[in-house]
Length: 427
Image (cartoon, rainbow, N blue to C red):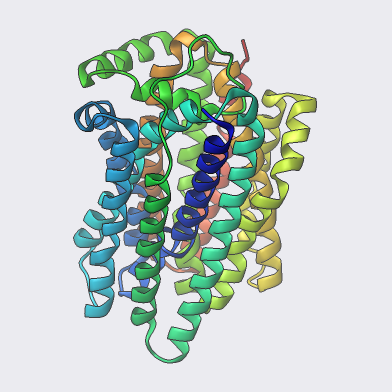
């Protein structure tokens, strides 16, 4: 590919990341808050965070067939992003109407997540072909930082709009504005994607940098020609993982995800409903995590290079244990913002370690099946964790003591994952 053409493609891909991330910040992250504004309870908000992800995890299995049907990864990704942008239309309608049933919200959120997750493997394959091996680590690192900044900007703007809407008695109208902006941002990202070229085939025989997990693992996943082959790989992967280091890694990651989701979906209703935070206060607290992630990534990367990915996983995994309990001592905005900064650093460390370990703990021949099992396992753990936490919250009366119990149980469940962490090895 000519140098000028590559530079242009990388530029429009970066612009796509910026528009997409703003969409996430002002749209996706406020769906649970929208449910609360419509009068639905915290359990419903938790379901909106978990159920659509599970639906999307299963829908992504059709990606190989979709790519084959439309003829290219690029065309499939564009189709998926258009569907994802259109998924905001019913949310805007319900915000203007002033009410929506939980089932309606679940369907719209499931379409949103399904479109996003179905397009991801093909996008990663596309980018794996487009970005030269020598450029992948610096390019995707900078792209990731830009994405975190975009989410932060979108989230902050969303909080400001909601606060203005609330002060004027037009909260639902403010949500309609937010979701309209989110849909437009996704359409903008689609335009940038359409302007990006697609190489004819993957480079053969070239080494791949261990830092770019998604661009390799998902590329292999999407390259499978039929759904039948994919399900065969799932069965084979489960059998192989039972006696390999990859099984221990996936078991730990799914267990920690379950314990984290036991409390995570209920932080938003805890602040907005139980403690009556304004949207601006909620925005200031929650956005601290996004900003911390963006700022700390380079330092975490350097730390990982020195101590290795397994030790990095230990740091992130152990640091995640007390996080839910730290929400309880004080409702002061400054204190909670500090807790969210710590959480952002913790999860940035954990996520980078996971990305690296998929190369160090999973043999190349197993990677396709393991990644597929991992995606499904995380989705199931997310749903089960949020469901279990919601049951406990509802049984205990959905008051302050109930939230305290849910957060405490989540921390105890994270402690219980340590024996699984001890079994994680690199090859």
